[in-house]
Amino acid sequence: MKVVFISYLFDPYPGVGAKRTTYWANNMLKHGIEAHVITATEQTVVSPNITYLPASQSGGLLRKLIKDQGLNWKITLKEYFANLSNFDYDIVVFSGGPFMHFGVGAFLKKKFNCKVILDYRDPFGYNPRHGDKWLKKTVKGYFEKRFNQMADAVTTVNDICKNQMKHADKVTVIPNGFDDAILNQNEQKSTSVVQGQILNGGKLYADFKMDHLLSIVSANDNLSFRQVGKEYEELDAMNNPRISSQGFIPYSELLNNINTSQICTVLTGGKPFETPTKTYDYIALNKKVLVITEGEKQTGGIQSILNNYPNAEWAINKPESIKEAITKLQAREIEIVDTHPFSRAAGLEKLVALFNTI
Image (cartoon, rainbow, N blue to C red):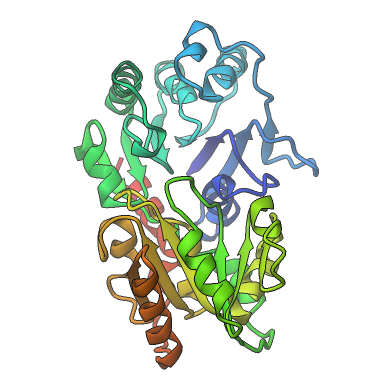
């Protein structure tokens, strides 16, 4: 079996959007499947298994309504495949966002008689974080319906996203998970936990207000807060040596930072679809997890991850609730769990099983 992954984002892009497809492509041979990648991410090392196709500079009039880089890339992909005569792949996996290049799938099915899988890492037709007006939601929903109707199978990261999608009966849930390959390389590194250190990995969204957590840390000399994964000048501007912000770092270094922290946070605006990838990294290292939400506790995609994880506490984004959760976590003994179900390896097993059913 041969598979080609078509993903706008891919390694060496440092953000989380590249991690899922990169892991799948790099580990497909373990399942006896040859993989090729087509990406709009410029490559620093030339590989015969990766084709770099930069996006076109024109996405047409639709770009005024839908801000999706896949519109530009779709033009490049269509030209590339229109001129391609040798295509020996059994399955094509499109991954997004961006998403609008998914439309090329219909062209590939017709020309090459291949199977097409669409992988939604994030919601497309309906994403409450985007605050889309009626017209934009309607247009995006129209395209999602067309895409999914054409596809042989669809994947997404959790049941909440699945239930909101068009043609949900075609959707298989494949959670993100942690990168077990890199984690295993770092297992032998001994680390000492810094008591009172709270770490947040990943992006901070505008629908979560940091004020209460930062005030609690500022008022307690035994606590510190470190933001890793994207730098925020407003945190450094506080001029508090116990509060810091750091940009993107290598994944192996991130794992070491997680390991040295006493508590790791998931900071959420309370949107049900959210399943931050760093949650899996925390679990991989059996860390204490503090979920602070603007919504209701024990809800949504985050709860679906943490439902069987004993080292987590939830708090409403209010001072007393946060203080209480921190106190409980600091006093708690860590329970070691089997982390394989939370790994990208487990997700890849589900993807390979899906290959064999379409």
